[in-house]
Image 1 (spheres, rainbow, N blue to C red):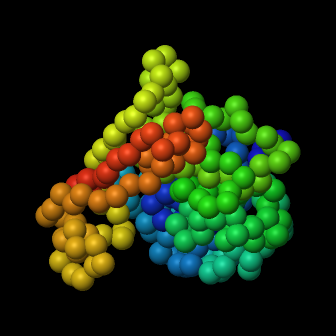
Image 2 (cartoon, rainbow, N blue to C red; image 1 turned 90 degrees about the horizontal axis):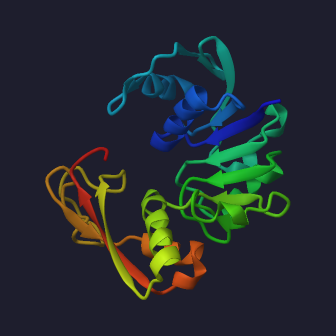
Length: 240
């Protein structure tokens, strides 16, 4: 029996999760998607991706569904998790990849709407557990952990390396830097921003900025709390 998946937020992360599940995880079944945009726009972006090219599956849509290779996946466009009906689709796990809802308080609406678990695709506040595979997944408790953060992309890169160093040699202090592709919160052209570095055009500048990954490593590996610092460089590329 398959585990039924719902996705809230069908942007870059949501669509890539969708493709990965469809290709590699046959025990998972995507049954519902919620995104503030209509299915017409997101069907086009799923099919034609500026980074990954043309998706091999046949993509279509109607008023209520995204249709992939003839399979209908329920579509809705609610702006608040409390409004989404996951129960009618039998959703077990919601992938929260909108980037807007990043705490247990924000995402409990998914549970109230019928889902059993929520996985937030970013760092989160007051979640039940922040989990990085290869580092602390053994701490997952299926009976008590409902709202789970998958941390950030940077934390997923740094934490496994730090764990190896800590397990084998110990760890007194560390400093990390991450070379990070541009993101949606950057400007295409120079414009006002409270951080003057981020005011610069993303496509023409290497922009030093902060990262929360160092702090997150200390939350995932508690004995390293306060021992790691770091910064990020936003570089003019769309992917790593």
